[in-house]
Amino acid sequence: MDLDRMLFTIPADAHSKEEITEILINHPEVKFVSFAGVDIGGHDTDEKIPIKLFIEEMERFFQQGVQTDGSSVVLPRIATLNNAKVDIIPDLDVNWYVDYNLKHIGDEGLPVGTLRIPSSLLHNDTDEVGSRYILKKTAEVFREELLKLIKENPYVLEYTEINSADEIEKIVMTGATELEFWVKTPEDKADRQQLSTSQELKEQYWQRTRGPVRTALERTLILLDKYGFGVEMGHKEVGGIKAKFGHSGRYDHIMEQLEIDWKYSTLLQAADNELQIKYIVKDVFRLNGLDVTFMAKPIVGVSGNGKHTHIGVVAKLKDGRTVNLFTPKDIKSDFLTPIGFGAMMGILKNYEIMNPFIASTNDALNRLKPGFEAPICIVTSLGHSIENPSRNRTVLLGLVREEEDPLSTRFELRSPNPKSNTYLVMATAYLAMLDGIKAVLRAKKDTSELERALSKKYGEEAFYLEKDRAYRSEENVYEAFTQEERNKYFGTPPATVWESVNAFDKYPDKLEVLKQYGVYTDLILSSYKKATIDLWAMELHNRIIPNTMELVRECKKCHDDNDCTDMDLFNWSNIQNLRKYLGQDKIDKKSLLTRIKNALDEGDYETASNLQKEMQEKVELLVDIYTNYKNNLL
Image (cartoon, rainbow, N blue to C red; front, side):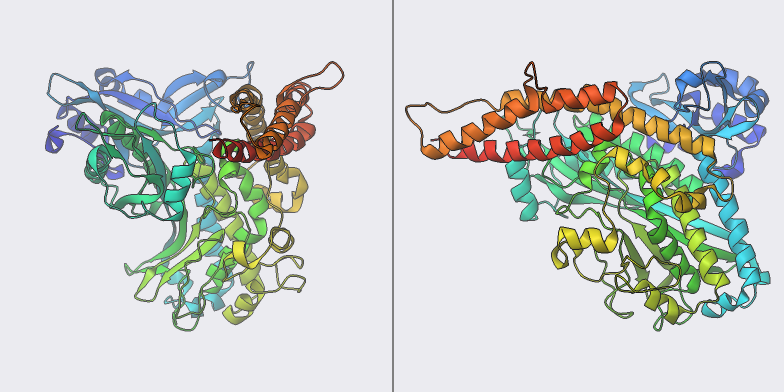
């Protein structure tokens, strides 16, 4: 491919009809246009409009977009069967990207491209809906409310490099994500024991890539750079095993975990960027004969894929300066400004109603388990001291700061995964942050008071935060606390999607944080809840239970009764009991899997959720016993 001849981006400042027409005429390899709206489930739309028609009717498309119906997008209780009109309206205020079909070479000798335009979803000609709208509205509310709070509480500027609120031209929220993913040769299956051992020995982390993985990673980074994403690095992550060089002269049995990072952007642009980047990663690696998965936990017993989400707030001043509102003027005396402390407290206090937008699938919750550097506790780390940053990898929310670079101060939210809807993750995070900032500034709290409050012990009274919680730990929370202690100090994490989404009902006061400014309405929350529960129930019924039954059947007898030990007989007896309990019905007693299906069919989600937890425990026990059983056979 001649990358220098290809069009990759039409920036936000080049969206006049004349500029767009000239650009597209000069790039005949771009043959289609697609309006990419994002529904409440995080799915983006894609349709192929011939470029000639788009140019001829550009003004009509800008005003009216293209029409779809409610059955085409996930907007339950909003776009219903008898009220299904949804229009996809292009967004002229963000960058547009060209999505290339790398396997379809056109007459120009270049891949055929589709100009993807991030778009809004409009229901019944009046109501903006969907994930992009929610984040866009959040950004507007946050900017307006934070500037208002600063003007009403000017004391807070004493902790910054800003003398007066009148110096501020605008508030800018910044975001970025770190994308982890597994790659493998098609049809190869994971050897959990090899992968687990390699992970414990850290044989893959930051190692040199080889063969087709190296080629695909390098090609991806080059391509991403052409789009202007500001690629920072790509590297091996902790998961994976060493590929084998086969007799054919090719690497096979590839199974590795990678990560790609790029520069931050404004909130909406950052989320749009991530969608396009994931498409590029998949296309390039598949072109090199490798499967890519962004699942949160594609392999049981091995590290899953995270998507650490970075969050920051800066002020653009009228004199051209940019000031980080989290960074204290005296960076050697304070961890954060009152605005930074308030933002951190807001996330920690309200995380229960953020979590349904982060851990919204069975796969996501499978990743959030102890032992794999994935956070399960609502806790933060500031650093062992102001001079000694810790970057504690066991906490939910980390503080990233560098004395030499005041603009770099930000939070790292470690719970999202590549399938998390970044639009909704960021929207809920910034609304939670605004709640904490508002409480801090109106109470006129200084940084020493806020650090003490954040560092409170369980059972201590503290400003804004809850008495029967602890919020800060500089220790490894998995080693320093037992599971019972973690649940007591930091809250018991949900074990199923049903438990996660039920936070909407369990914490009504915290839910008001999302509803206060009209970003999340009762209808939007109801729509999201139904979409999430429907997906959970369907996957549990139609995929997880059949897969579990297949696993039960695969645990077959492998010993000869005349040539075995008493340990083999003991193990097999336990295995048989578990297999029957999980999957074999009797006339008067149904198996565990059948009882889960029946509960789902009856809409008894509470029972189904409790039985799912029991199923997970029994399956884990079955796998462990069966592994020991097979390992003991000669």
